[in-house]
Length: 324
Image (cartoon, rainbow, N blue to C red):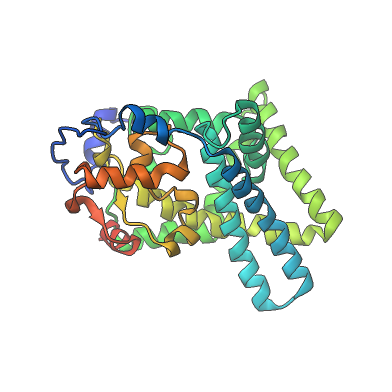
């Protein structure tokens, strides 16, 4: 961030260029004026589908070993290319499970939710298996683009020039972005908490590397786990993140903090699995599990909270607008 600017000054100079001023919404029989669901409708939306989520997580955890098996069984250059992209998609899906767990919405049993979604999947997604992401992410939800927004820079300055976007994407696919994420983990290790988190991070990745070594080889860990995360997942993550909040600004009205993009099966497969693409609905009420976000989204549309003027028909149209 700009060191000599106040937060208010940064909001003016760095955010808001993609905001469409929100029309007044008086509320409806099932929605409050801020879009949050009311009463029985709210209660039905907030029920966590434990069994369905268990099946989704089990399937998601099965994808990485299945991809490795395919490469071992059908070793071919094309298979490797497909596998690298496929592994990044699997890692993206795992991160979305981690995100759901951070909201305590993956499983209704908190201990099970935290063990599977935060500890285990947190390790798999190159985290420390701690609550660090959950704590930071809740700050993001409480006040998007606020003083404690952890991703303020990521969402700022849009729309940007084509050359600037190309530079960002090249940093992603070259692994530079991943290096910038990992590097801070090895700083300030004299602090007990920092050291503990770094050891936990290393434990997670060493454990995964040992599994690769035992079942195939360490080379597979480098090319089928580390490379997809460092060079493909980072690209997917940026594209998804800027599609959620790029160019928006701080506001009590979530329609001015979060984009609304019409969802498609292709987008869900490549970028927004597990209904994470219903992101405006998610920010309107972060206690609604992902399974029920399409229902809340439908109500927001039908009752007039989301109007046609703020609907991006697809991701391609939004990305074009994000680049001058």
